[in-house]
Length: 174
Image (tube, rainbow, N blue to C red; front, side, top):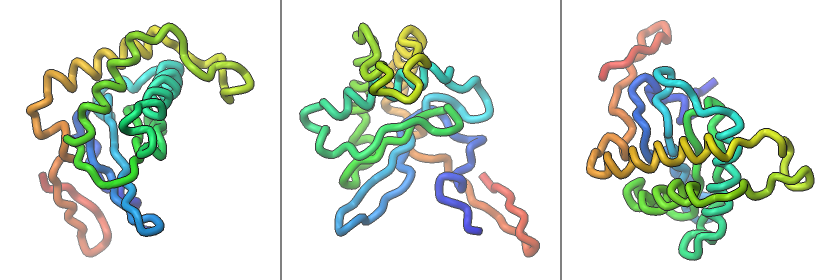
């Protein structure tokens, strides 16, 4: 079975940032998936589950209410590995072009007084939220983005070549 694109990125080299994960033509229009990576995979602790859930609610609400972007947003949701999120937008902008949107989304969390959509009627696990930790992670990531705005490494997946032997073993040549 062919490895999907997101599993083909060398996760030992990824740093936090905003990356273009894939572009797809859907019904004649371009749709782009972005990897919004908050943590270094396999090298630092993942995001607390309750905080991740709160960040999902808070930032999804921000994105879907942001006047200039709300009609472009298709999806905002957590990665199963709990190191970041996927953002799917209509169109095909570069990671640098969505930098301000992502930064504003994470900065907006600091002003939240509650997590939207946390009633039993609105959420499948409404008790699993942690606004305080969500604010901490959001602030940490926003600060990191600001400090690294001129660093190309936060916008481009690490460059590696996969070497595949005759018997199918894969090696990375960085």
